[in-house]
Length: 280
Length: 287
Image (spheres, each protein chain N blue to C red):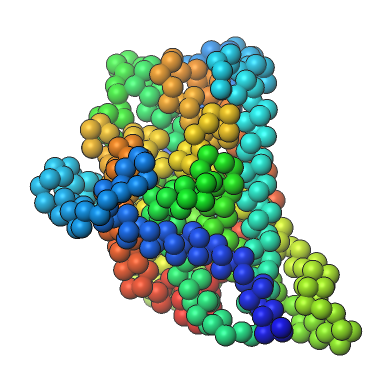
């Protein structure tokens, strides 16, 4: 390596450092603030304490209608995220199979529509979705968020699962058909177990989608007893009372941690999914 | 019987497409010609919602449209240039140091929207507890209310940086696929780093690059949740782009009719972008 090349590398590293350190600091301070007794005023925690974490798991508020501890809120979040995950797996597992394996009329049209929907930002239909949910009498229920979020996640999911079905050799299916299995048995007993890695990736992505959702819960849910962690955290940020940054950091970390775990788990599969259908 | 089997399998998907794409799209047309309000019932008012938009009856629409353009241009520039810089730099730094930086820059992607908004609110908090004011205080400067001073700048930065991880991942994969002989040949011929970048790398990754630009164009045009949480669109309308304006009209003022008319503009814009660039967005058959 020549001296010029080495200097180039050092300069690059320095530039990266300058733009990355502020970002990293935000997260480091999030952690430090959650384990400090008072708002952080220096680089490192000055008086370490788990006060905020105890406060998180203690009784939250006395006012009626509001969740009295973080556990019901956590439960609501799990219901929404789990609902999105299961519904999404069901929809994508079925549709992905048909699109990959069965010839039917209108398939070409369906596939090109799906590709358009993949780029179509569902949020611009929010007002009309609210209107539709009102007539379905679903406003202010978890189901409204679960359904809307599934509609958002399912297009990509179907596409990913279809890719996994595409990779299964035809012979396996043919052998089962000769044995006289019905379509349902063939799908549920033989094909679905073969695409388990795809289902895992799509399931986790859908769970993360439901877990992190803010705008649907914020718009469709009115009762504070049905708050999820996202809207709960937002209510703390937006409240007029004096803001306790130690507590906010604690709630943020508590909310964020499962997502980091799950992302770490599927990181490899994600890159593949992100590139799927982009002419690669 | 057997002919119905595939429709049984795609049935749930079709039901969702119908309920959450087709019917809402049609309903948007319907609602946009009514004066629908809180009761979700409205009377037909013809095209008055649209004339209101394009006349001077809505005095802030000009500001909103200007914000939309500023926001799109600013956020896309940050996302693309940031992603490009990180993809290039992390590749030339090698797997160890480069991987570390990529890990750091993956953080925004694993951050839930509300937490991301919180980080920005906290960083620019007007009191001395805000991160920036804390640093300024240590240097002996007084606290400033950053968010009301530079709302548009902060909103653009928060959204633009959020796009970087995705851009970085895709561009790094694309640059990694360029055969090293091509780059070496460039170096041998005496091309400078910038020349290699502009004349060799950019043309070779043109396809994913334009995909990312269009993708983010659609995404920034229609997402508003970070702005809603960080500035609320204010002060006054200083940081309200069209998507947030639509949301606020519909759900804050409960003017669903006018909101839908605005949403229709967004739908037309998005569909134009999608159909105009369907090739680049990967709509060619067999992909």
